[in-house]
Image (cartoon, rainbow, N blue to C red):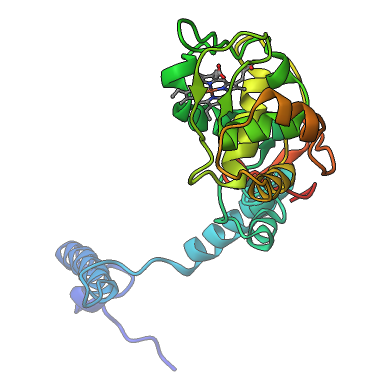
Length: 262
Ligand code: HEC
């Protein structure tokens, strides 16, 4: 084949491109590139008006989060349930019946607290400090307060017609047993034996007080104030019943013993 002779048509000679043509080609090419890029951008903008997040960014984020999660999990119990809630706490509470009442207290403390309230019946005569005075004998240091519990229970429930423990006669103490429950009697007896400087240190239990009320009701002169003769003859003894460890736990309201560990 014979190479065509372009000498007569210099504008079509590929080896000698026209200067103007070269410029036009470059311009056209740039414009095409710009338009293509613009179209590409338009396409990437979705309906929501935001550019979709690249897949690699998702992947990288996932890797970082998983790594961080593993690191925190190992570094400490970051989300450990047991760290914030003591193990078994809820279950123990439910088993105990958590809303049954206030927490248990030491027996002597519980009896004293209740007895101090019951002593409100006596305070008008025997005084806030138990020292009596005037027409009323002192309960502080009294042999009959600190002595046999049967005798003391009879005085409280039925009253007393002198002489008193000191041999002195003040008058007549009226019966205090009306409306007095075993819990009231037990706690007020415990209270006066451990207040006003008295330090007997023991507990007159509700069970003992129940026995005392029975004995009182069985008296020939039930409800009549006792005399020293009757006290010495029939009541110079302790009420029956098992002693209660002053440090044992009791319910502060009922004064019933509470089993250990509950
Ligand atoms: C209305 C006044 C009055 C009230 C209330 C009263 N007492 Fe008395 N108490 C007396 C009098 C008076 C005597 C002395 C009686 C006598 O001389 O025979 C006495 C004596 C006693 C004794 C004997 C003391 C001794 O050493 O011989 C005891 C114990 C006692 N009272 C406890 C109590 C308790 C506990 C209460 C409350 C539950 C109470 N009293 C409520 C007036 C009262």
